[in-house]
Image 1 (cartoon, rainbow, N blue to C red):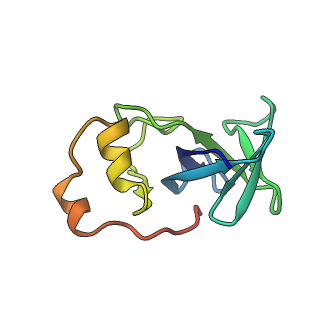
Image 2: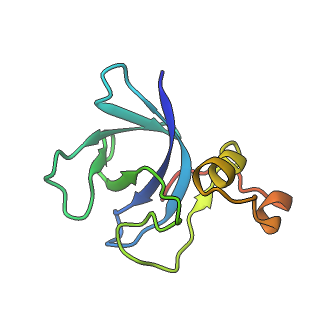
Length: 115
């Protein structure tokens, strides 16, 4: 399956929610995204400040490609996303074009589900 590093933010609790940077895989048709045991489908423009929903729970998410400047959230926020350890180096060097921050290289985040 095709995969890509993506920004995943839960919108279940409101406009700003817990966020992660992680590797998302795509179904053969690309209509379904998979991350951390969850399956997501597009809201096709019908979501309120969200673009995908969890097929099992119906909870809404903002899922998008990460930006070089790190401003990935739909709204400006001081909340920094957790970065899955398996994508940390690739995210910082290939996407952000920077070295891995010292504090992250010593203590990389373990994978958790978005909340």
